[in-house]
Amino acid sequence: MIPEYKLYHGAVLAELVDRCGSAVSIRAYQDSGRLLNYVLSDAVGIQVKHATQRLHPWQFTFPKTHLEMLASLKSRLRSVFIVLVCHTDGMVCLHVDEVLPSLNAAFGSQAWLRADRRKGEWYRVYGPAGEYPTKFPTGIDPVVEAMRQFAGT
Image (cartoon, rainbow, N blue to C red; front, side):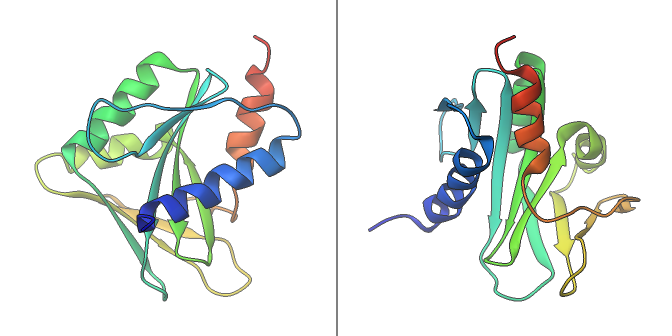
């Protein structure tokens, strides 16, 4: 049986391969536990989180180990993103610098993000400090742009 999380991760990785238009190397980045983090073309890191509930809003939790892995990715790579897969509605791509301070502020408790979107609109993302000031389009364009920027450097 295929673990459910691999179906969501596969959707993200397939979208990356489809959108990049050139060769992409993908490797796992983990110390132990379930596959969660990837390194793309040795320059860009992603942490994929998914929500299985069909209806919005979609909730994502970040245990201490996930925050530590994000910090580790950030210290080793040029650019790092969190990709939130909102069931089959779409993907929200957040640069780690946008959200890590808010997530770390909730370090004593469970860190979390929540994504919400009305039909035809961009995603609104909420964290421990409230709603983020910008809205986010569906898709992984920021990851693709970062990979193109760092290709061959």
